[in-house]
Structure formats: C-alpha cells, structure tokens
Length: 384
Image 1 (cartoon, rainbow, N blue to C red):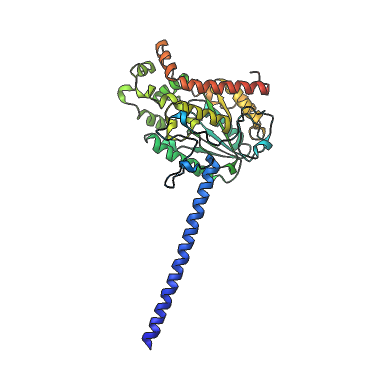
Image 2: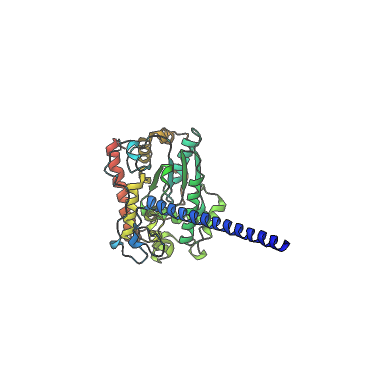
C-alpha cells in the first residue's frame, strides 16, 4: 500500500515537472522569436528594408554597403531619406515629424532633440564644445556627454576600436534620460534611434592643413592638453621618427603621413562604421556625402567658423539661441585663440604637390561641404 502511494506521488511529481518544463520551453521560444522579430524590425527601421536575396544563414546584411570584395560601382542603393539638400531652411519641424531627425539645412524647432557632434580631430571641436557647454549647461542644465573610448583605446586595431566606440555611443544614447542632450567625441557617424530626435552636426577643415596640424599636435601638443594625454600620444611614435618634419615623413612615405587611413580621415568620419569606410574609395566618398546630405543638420568648415555658428543658430533657434552672442563675447574662453599646435615648418611645394594628389578625395569632400555651406549662407542672407 505504501509503495503504491509512493509511486503515485512520484508519478504526479514527474508529470508536474514535465508540465513546468513544457511551459518554460514555450516561454523561451516565444521570447526568442519576439526578440528576433524586433531585431529585424529595428534593422529595417535604421538601415532600410531587409533584402531577402542578400540574406544567408540567418545573417541580415545592410543593402546599403558592399561586401569586402564588392566593387563600389555595383553597390545597390539603400533606402535612405529623401534628399534634403534642395529643401528651404525656412521649413520647420513639421517636415521632420515623419523621420524624427534633422536634415541638412532644414530648420528644426523645439528642444526635445539629442545633439550628436562627431568631432573630427583638429577641426576646432574644442571651441565648439566650449560654446555648447556654456550654452546648454549654464542656461538649461542640458546633459553634456563625451565618448572617450576612441581616445582611451588608441593602441587597438581600427575594427576593435570601432566596436568599442559603437557600444559606448549606444550606451550613452540609452542612458539619455531627458532631452535636450549633447553627445560628442571623436567617433564616426552611426545611426541613432529616431525616438531621440537626433540632430547631427560637425566641422571639417582644409585636409592638408588638418594633417599638418595633427602631425605636430601628437608630438608637441598645443599647450592645453594634459601632460598625461600628450605622453600617450607620444608613445605611439617611434623614437627615430619623433623629430622628423612633416616633409621628411611624406618623402620617406611613412604610414604616419601617407597610409590610406591617414589620407581619408574626414571621409571615414562621415562614411560611418562599415569596415570599407576605413579605406579611401569612390564608395566611401559617396557614402560620406550621402550621410551629410540626409542625416546632418549642418557640417561647417573651420576656416569659416563664425558663419558655421551663425547658421547653427538660424537652423535650430530653440536649441542654439544665443550661440553667436556667446561666440562673439570677448570674455568667452574661445579656445580657437589659445589652442595652437606647435608650428612646424610649412610643407614644401614638392610635398604639397604629393599630398594634394594623395588627398584628392578628401578635397572632394571638403569642397562639397564648402559649396553647400556657401549656398546655405546665401539662402539665409549671411554675408560674412
């Protein structure tokens, strides 16, 4: 009798355990399936439609970027936002409601935006950050966040640093609890979730002038960066190369001056985080132009910094009201007047000729941005 009761209890527990296991399996299956659908929708939302012809083994690929072995001329055009370069800057946020993001030269109203400033090195970014901090932190208490991952991990490969940087940016976005907010740092363009209403901005510079400035900056600093940071930069330079002039570096064809990554820095910052963006090509140049046209509110140039500030205030008056006044204020610590890199010898005519050839695509991007800026100045009546 006792044996039968024991067997019945054991059988009952067995069926109970089996039932609970089945329930757990169903929950796990539902969660995995739901998450996968959500991921597909998110990727489609950010990058465009998922092309089933380019999907293999469960891998979803962005149809807007080539494979590593693809020719740029055979790349399919992805589904991006309509070209905003022809829109009038007097159009307001009403035209932006469909995309929840700013477009080049199109006026943005309201303050509920996440300003994303991917700072190209040696392009006046510390001056702009100083203005943003004064503008937002002092007057509205806006959250200013800096991504420093790319600086802390300068010894990593480009691919590993890109992965870390992407994770850091997305974490900052996730941690953004209120708007407006500002994210800045030395990182490449990447899509930000539309619910944050991103407003992308940046500044570029004459490519050769930027390269020469960078070359001497990482050796001698500018009188503003901490000694610890300068020592980290110095540690990346081989001792026998430390006192070389820029001319010597170019004529000896050292990677520090003529490697593909060095002669396409500005392109890569706007092309994005795809591995092919690290190499100068017609595809990476076109991607950079496309992102500037369709994702950025404004990309200014360092050589016309004042106009850049003026246009920012005109295009986003609720966000940048008073920015010009702050910039023109003689008591403001505008670091363009004090952060001067060590002045090495100017490049010789021979080296300039060499570098103009190597920097051809960088100058195509620079002139593209400069021409767009001039057209925008004319539209807005800025005569400076």
